[in-house]
Image (cartoon, helix red, strand yellow):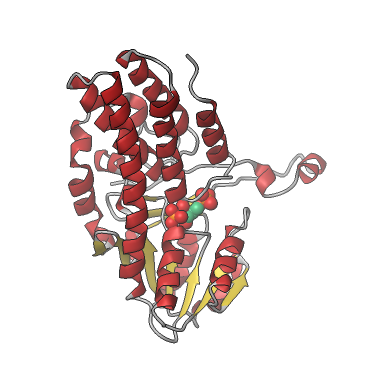
Length: 333
Ligand code: RUB
């Protein structure tokens, strides 16, 4: 039996960034696994388990950096494998997969709401806040603060090469928040007039380093230099349990045609273009990480990991779900 067609579609949408942002990627992957439970036709529990693992393998390989993706998949797979080992029949296994995926999605939405509440307390009347890329978690903080009656303005970088900053600026402007879009390289120029920077995260390492959209670390450095607070809004499923074991987080490199068009590449074959999609901000440049569990200093990342993913070091998962090391630069312990 072939997996439901929608799973390949979701995988393709994540790979091509029609679905993007670490939280949305995670929820889409969980919904993909739920589709196995709903649509994969079999009366055999082994076949259903194999189909689940096959869907997990396809989905987890779509983008390498956002740890929310393997974390979402592991949330569902660990529960399903436990049920399987305890002798669940095919219907019970279906139910476990479906409810686990639904639980992940519901928890992740609640997490963003709580982050908005906690983070909004850090935004003050009259602030000038800078943000980079488009993070649902970071934008939720700003929207919540505005909803609470705080009045501030936002500087949003355009975020080369995919211009996710345009999404952020439009969302904030639609809510009535004064927003100014700047080119990424103007971040340091404006930093002296900024009160706080808030960004999202694709991954948080055990040492508190944060992996986020390329350019984030340069903005953090400029904030550090100007003594401007640097906040990260990140649900706990963005924390990377692999980094407790010393695995480095893989930094995705995307196609050069996102940076320059094909024509340019053809006309200038000697020009090499590189397009890393993320970078690493060291914990020294981060003041706080706002999670749904509360606000922590980056040095508290290991505590969150131990509490949320303590089971990880003992887990009996297939290798592809244990974060096999990639050709990475970076962050770890
Ligand atoms: C998006 C990005 C976002 C984080 C957090 O990168 O770097 O800051 O994913 O987003 P891309 P969220 O556009 O390449 O996916 O808070 O929405 O999870």
